[in-house]
Image 1 (cartoon, helix red, strand yellow):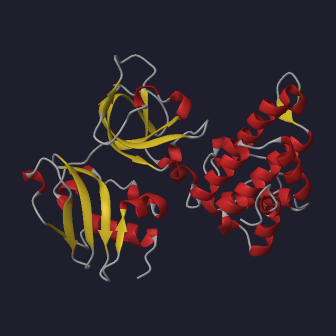
Image 2: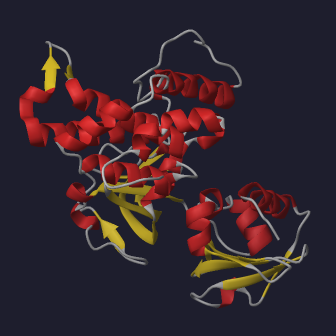
Amino acid sequence: MSISEDDVLGVLKQIETGDITLVPDYDPQERIKGDVLYRASNGWTIEVSNWSGEFAGIVEIGLPDGSILDIDHLDRCMPGVAEYFPGKDVAWRAYRMKALETGFIYLSDDKLGRFADAREGMVVSNPSSEPPWIIVNHSLRDVTVARWPGRLWLAQVLDRLEPQDHRGNYTRCVSVKIVREMPTHNLFGPYGEQVEQVLRFAGGLDRGGAERLASHRHPDAAELTSQGWHRWQALVAEKDGTPDRDMRGVVTAANNQKSPVGHGLSLAHRAVSDAAERIDGDAAFEEDEEERWLIGPWAAAGSAMLETVWGLGAPELFDVPEREKLLRAWQKRPGHDGV
């Protein structure tokens, strides 16, 4: 049975509306902890993590043909299901559980601090209610990723700052409880594993690799990245407000709108810039009073990495010949003969 993320989310929606009902293998309010297996009226089974009668996330889904969607599959292929938490009313009515206030915490490896040893079930707290606070993002799309690699957690809010007094889809916290750690590739869309492959490669570039990438770029590839932005904006906003704007080299759109790969574009460009700085220092850049930018083969290598992220991370926006153009430099990267 071939099941998509939309299929699973559709079933969860039917559970919310009551069109599909659930029968638990035990009353979640009678045990302190332990997964609860629900038998759904459509023939599915849904296993939910139970924290003292609170809904702590879906850990497994069983299909009528006997196949299983385990937590690793959900994390890798169905992040919308992995991050699903019902509202207060639905949690109690459908699952007989209390709803958790949950969200996502991302920290780069050089900024882990108190989260360095964070693991499932651990409580992480600040010593006071003074900043810097623990930031819990309401969805994966809300997570800001300024540096990579790092670690990503699903966390329960235990002690939130009151009043929040800010704009943005996040909660400022003093204390959280780790529900579980999640793969960071979830931050970069459905093809995030391939995006992370590009980030690892870009971070290890040397001058010879940059020159090789520069020499193998397709002349149409940069224009295709601009078209990718316009196609993406038309898809998410149902119209493209700036169809004539040249968006070659753009890593973040207007109003800080993220790309289909989250912060993958800006991270790829930063990885090349960091490599250039490490190897050639100031000679890899030009600057004025306001900006600093890559030059020479490093600039072309940075563009090649952006083209690669578009081609691997958002394949649905391009046809096959277009993807081949975007990925030409990647296919010729040092030490590799294919994607």
